[in-house]
View (spheres, rainbow, N blue to C red):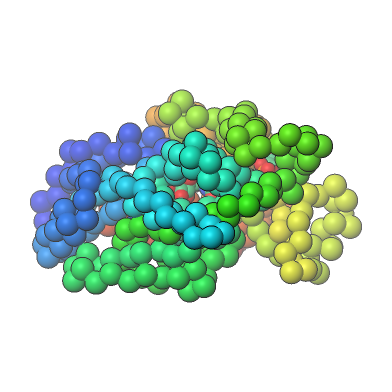
Length: 356
Ligand code: FAD
Ligand code: EPU
């Protein structure tokens, strides 16, 4: 896409619209509350050859520069409940806040989402990277995702089996680039079974009076202890994904590091990127105001909320190179990188063996 580069004034701050608290501006920022408005704005900007970016809560992005176009902040709300014999069915518009949805379900005695408490962001962004935590992910509950092409208003329903959900991945990261997620459907069993398989939750297994609310509270408690509140120290959660490596490499590493944390996924080893980063001695490391969080090395903090996107990216590249050189494992960023015109391919920055 060749964009119109003439006369771009960027005076609208994006600092409060991204959880890294990066101080960049956009040409225009508009909060939308309905779909017609969203489609009209999108069409208007695209017709002028200007870039458009839709944001939920900006909790999985890194702005490198001013954005030369329109940022649409999605606040299209609505939660609709229906039921079948075994399930509650929820249809939720994409601008709802994810954590508020989790709270709403528990308050209404609809259970299952408690392990996914306190994940920032909007409902519409959740299927894109198949949000997950504490042994659950949205794929366990997703029935469908509704998308729209804002130019011709063509709406499609993508059923779960066609969403291609994988660890931090789905079809929406690869296809349907010209579409916007407008709503999702979730199904939650009326027969609640606690999911306590994640290591941190195992101690709750002995609690015979376990309830969804107790799991919800416990997860909020451990998340608050481990992950700093982004309004105080800007961050986007895990900067990198946990790498999944071949059985051969996994076994080889285990022989050297017998205490290495891992889980098995179809014989492949899912390693802890935080542990790998820690092994490269980055815990607490700070450069240009960007700090590797000492309680969780996967989280990069904008420690004084004055660093630039490039400062954060530079530290991430340094980490990527160190882990690659030490372990032969090249981490993949989870966070999306946005420049003047939109999302850019992280491979531009994260290349094996680049000198830095
Ligand atoms: P944004 O950052 O606003 O957008 C992300 C991308 O999706 C952008 O490219 C945007 O253009 C696109 N997008 C947004 N809305 C739409 C739409 N309606 N249609 C099409 N495209 C759209 N993630 C986890 O999986 N598990 C965790 O435990 C977790 N913990 C986190 C903790 C913290 C403190 C933070 C800051 C982040 C964490 N994350 C976690 C990452 C983040 O919460 C998720 O990726 C979340 O789904 C992002 O939602 P958002 O609305 O903020 O997306
Ligand atoms: N570990 C270390 N050092 C670290 C971090 C982790 O040794 O600095 C080891 C520990 O052994 C720990 C294990 O890794 O027990 C797992 O750590 P944690 O439970 O914090 O989970 P994670 O694998 O580091 C993932 C997700 C998080 C999610 C948590 C909880 C990814 C990339 N990250 O982190 O998601 O909240 O599990 O389920 O998969 C996010 O995506 O933004 C995010 C925060």
